[in-house]
Length: 77
Image (cartoon, rainbow, N blue to C red; front, side, top):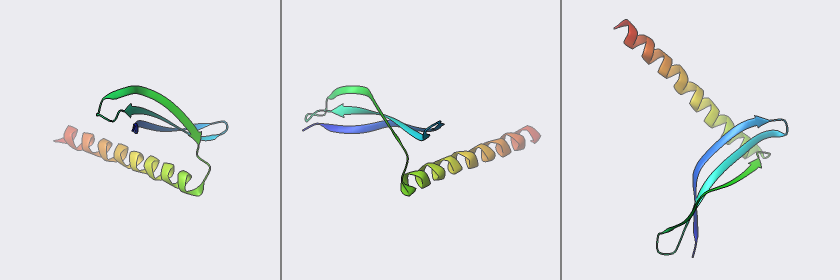
């Protein structure tokens, strides 16, 4: 039985809406990588999908702020 494993996800604004792109690998029954770097995408159009993207964007933005504060703190030390 083949297993598919998501290896990366990105979300971006496109003219059509929020586009979620992903790559995945296929793993064979014996654990061997059958294929990698397979790609797919979809437009986030449900409330749950849009909320998930917003949550990740907010988390990334918060880390940018944290990183900037850490860099300023290090520079002042």
